[in-house]
Image (cartoon, rainbow, N blue to C red; front, side):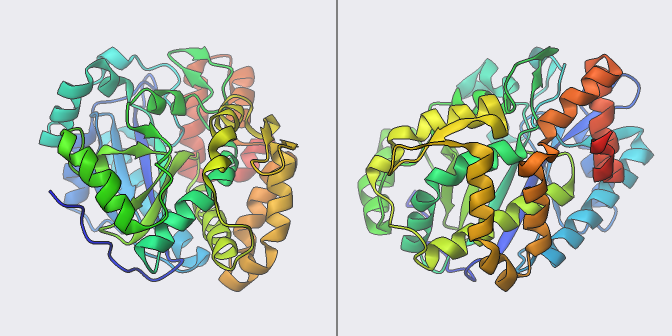
Length: 380
């Protein structure tokens, strides 16, 4: 099947998708209740889209298309409130976090949908191990070539998003010592990682996608699990490295950070991307996953070592005029606080484990964060 034509979108518009955990309120383990949740939400007016995901203990929600932080945040908050209300009726809790701290992958059930059954058949146990939870951010592009430019120009900034969103330190009952253990599960898939370095859509479609399709390995862009990929049917690029944050407020802030970065890059704020930018890509990605904001990355052009939190703070300062133009100053101010000392969600969950003394207490804290959106609770 030929690649879908690249739909022209309003440049710099944004949308958010969040994969969320469904949790049993009795023991805080995952609950295979997606069918019940989706059935209930079909009968109510949900202020967005809600869809099944690969296993029955997770759902995905998607916002509409937005130009500004204020409207995106308002919709995400309405969606959260609707999910909490539905969960209360079903005696379920909903929460963020990139991994569930103690679920067993072999207990998970594949959601009964043809695509998910096919993925399970192809990938075996990896499919159930893919019960992890991420945030995807879409940014509108005026052309397919612009999408490829942004996709590669953003490569050096992807560690920022990993570190700022990291919320998966615990997996299978253990502290992994990673801030984002979720991305290790994603990296197990053969079509994950980075996209090939092509800057013209004609070349991408003819010299890469058509050849990959001919092998039978892929049928559509959905078959690529790249960290960032073009989405031709939406006219967007889709950033996929973020863990699902504990609050929708943080999710909206991350989307606005990406929007401001794209505006900066399209304005010619940096030299155009080159293939050699990727020489340090996997190293930087690992540093962000393992150490979060305390990771040390290498600048791809200068081979200079940078403390990730310092690089984020410097970038936020450079983006201030763009944030003002886009109306997202408050969103970037939240991320400034995270990088300057407030810490990411992984640090918060580790503090909760120290206070509660159990991984169940970690889930309970994540549920409270999503339900009550109390960012100040993290200061405890």
